[in-house]
View (tube, rainbow, N blue to C red):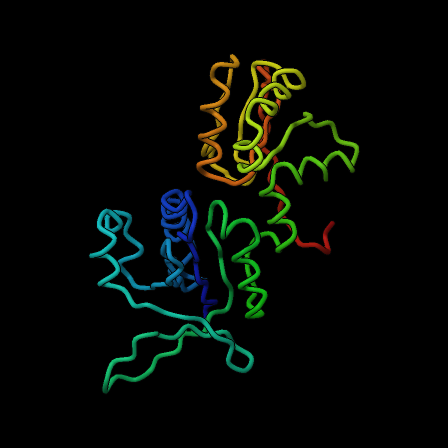
Length: 245
């Protein structure tokens, strides 16, 4: 029997649309000779849907029409298995339970990539692809991750972090601190988003407030660090299990 892989994507995040594109690409790439693929689209309000129409990227142009073609589902552990069941049971139709062998989260951003959806899988005791809860949470929070790297004696840029309410109450003091301790040019970032959402390079003090307000519109916590103008970007992918480390 083939392994049934449930691909989870979408979710309550500003990177919702990026997740859809990534998931459709991933589902098309999975070897169907070895795996059955069950799409699980999570709407922005947390509802879960499945259906064959979810495999086609063009269908997402009209979400209302797309969801009418799909089934709303939920997941529950039954004995040794995790099963997917229909929420809306129709009269005279058999209640179908689909056994899920492994979850493959293709998610981006807060409320999913940050350990949230991994916690859901852990609760169900459902095997899943990718990082566990703590590594997902730490990896998404740029300020926390800097502290982890510093503790490992790896060089990182110093930064200033603050919350939205602190900025509203002490805007002038925070801007003065940033100008003195960080200097220009600098980068303003939401602390826990990806895909470069809400990030601004700031060259002068006049640009600082609008950049911070943009970041605050996406996240409660903001990180400011020096902009490195002459840099080389290196992406490092890690593959393996905890036992391999």
